[in-house]
Image 1 (cartoon, rainbow, N blue to C red):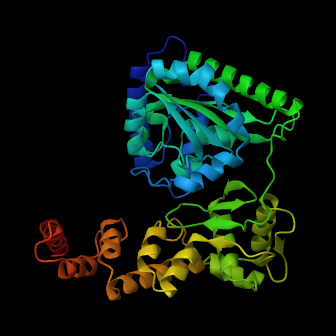
Image 2 (image 1 turned 90 degrees about the vertical axis):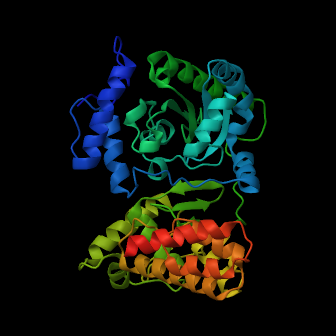
Image 3 (image 1 turned 120 degrees about the vertical axis):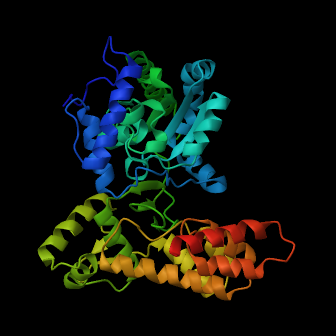
Length: 427
């Protein structure tokens, strides 16, 4: 297996020929789990992590923040002051070369995506847009996400991406650190065709990152605000679990992508303000008998990534309440705001989880939302949900849509065709 620091396109190699070989290795890995010895270690390790995290390599299920939520992330990013440097040194040249430049925060959320307009428009199809979560747990193997995961520069050539819709693209990313504390602040990425994975692109991105970090230090020495902005303590922690392979915890102005087990534990505790004993948590996490020692070890690892004192013991509980998108949907349903509930519903609760406690939460929310949609008089909400992944194959929902559509509606033909297709599939 090629080493972790091996270039995506070795000197003298033909990128197109290498990409064709990688496409075969990618297909073989998805079919058999075997990884060819010529696949670079950084890619092989990322492929394994991504599949273990429950990602579907055939689809792009990346969450996107828009509007005020995106602007809030930008305002709180210490990298916002460095964007003029990025634009001057990299974006202008990338635009001329038909490439795209992206800057992410430390959690993998893309804050700025700039460059060639045509390429940016095509990149929207794979959700490579400002506000999208391109962390490795969300988007699989990709240059910015894997660079943030490993803390090292990463180049990804076409089929080295895990998700098949992303394999026509190549990218190079370098992490950005606080010049004094070396804390990870984000990543700088260039995305485009195969030539982006060449060594000269990496050199250019490295040089731009060095300039950004120098600008951050100069900015601090000039007496401006510290690189790290003040954390708004009044903002409650929030957990995002809908439609995600693993959860994202937003707290104190930062977004942290959790592993699956930590996602499950934090969700279960957020649902039980009074806490859970070690035995109760063990039962909620696994159908197989699990020792409290194992649970304690997981809690210990979770504490390491949470603010000090966030978790209590005996019982295990969150010291302060944690809001969640699950609770937001449930609250809207409880107040008969069905349209709002559908808009907030990003998909099933942690769909990659098989933990009994999480499965129960997932099933309860899906059932409650479905029942309220069938009972409520909100045709727009019903259609929106039926057209989404959770309702696409639900004949009862589509039958309800057909019954409620006005006689002359342009949608009726499409709905009736979909119902016939569902009937044929079930026959």
